[in-house]
Image (cartoon, rainbow, N blue to C red; front, side, top):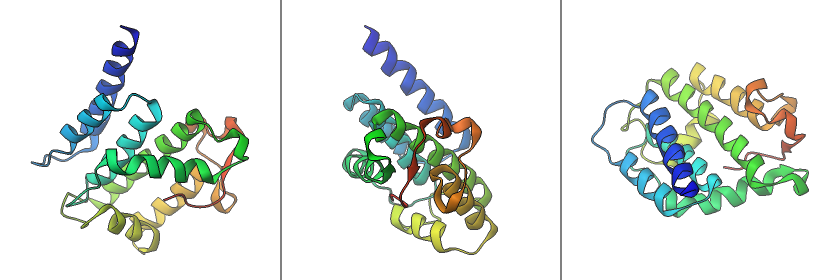
Length: 170
């Protein structure tokens, strides 16, 4: 019963936070997310799925989170230093920070589901684009990961973990 309640509240939080920044669309990304959350029990899987959803708001053909999250989680945890602190709970903090960064980028870019062809196009433009949206995104991304001597946002909880990222995990 506890597990069902946790999944219910986690699912409700994901849906409400995703709908707050999402433009209306006929895409079934929310349905895919709900199915994935229900089929995958771990908290880090759920937060990775929310990260993919934050990208899919601007992508014509989005990655299926159930197919890519295990690799993204592994990549992220592999970049956390010191390695002995590379846990699911620390990974969740990073994914949450990156998800918030993506939502801010999506608003600044005024993107929709036809703005980018794929998740990799979305990420490539974030990292190489020259608009103020991309420059702001890179600064916020570097802050989340403590890259280039940046400091994570105070409300992210990352500073308290005494971890940094070695490099961009995505």
